[in-house]
Amino acid sequence: MGVGPFPNAVRRLAGFYPGVQADIAAVCPPRVVSELSSPRLSMKTFWFTASLSLCLLIGCFQKNVPTGVTTTNATSKDSNPLLLPVKVSGKWGYINTTGQLVINPQFDNALNFQEGRGAVCIGKPCSWWGSASPNESRWGFVDASGKLVVTPQYSAETSFSEGVASVCIGDCGEKPTQPFSRGYIDRDGKLVIPAQFAIATDFSEGLAEVCIGTCQWDEKTGYSGKFGFIDHSGHFVINPQYDNVNDFKNGFAQVTVGKGDEAKSGYIDKTGKVIWQPSN
Image (tube, rainbow, N blue to C red; front, side, top):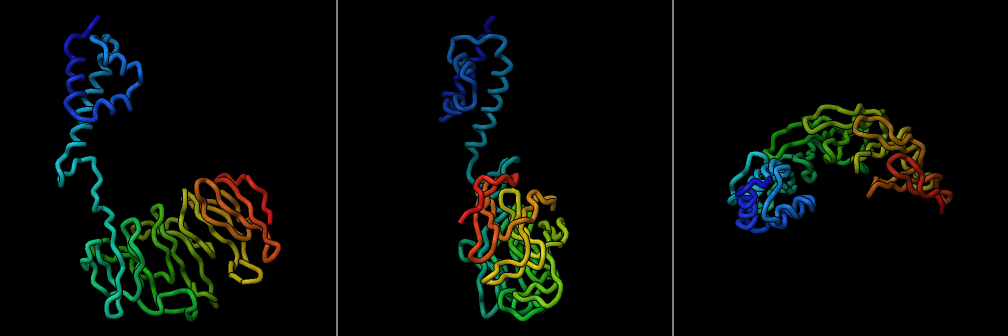
């Protein structure tokens, strides 16, 4: 039994808003597209068509929202603004993309903003590489307003990636003489993965490379530790067994076994399965 004029209203809607015909073809099964094209629709398709009509109305409204108007389910473009570190008279602050100074220069070092947080340092030398060990500089994080959301307290840290940042506690210099360890904090500064690693890098594709042992680098012998991968819970997904690794990209990571001239490289997937045996 047909349902009269309602399908025509849907068709008029499709003709009134530019691009809706393509949207219907993109999101609807061929059977429904075909029925929408026919003179009459079956009762079986009526309620589906009603739901489709409502979705189209909402979708078209969102597509045609005037500039400057934010819908309730839209994400603000300013939630994670891009800020750039600049150095002025020996101190670091941040500018926005129009060149306006938005966070006054007050830090001894500052890194690029990522995921709404900027890594900042107070004290000198604010660098773990080549610095005296230990040193008194401390790292924390500011938000886009310049508020310190994580008080400077860490000897070293990375920018945020996938919601967490690696932080170092203790003597994190190039050649440490005292204990140190690395873990991960969230955007509010909560330690979500305990400091237990010698090396802890940014998360990539849900996994982060970490090193167990002293993990000091030597040009001839490489790292004095073993690398593996953890997930966001801090659990090892791939046990520490490699002499070096690279981050996961497109689902695969390069891994190294052996050191010096004997080093061999291969590839693993995110389950740890070897897809190419290390070779040289």
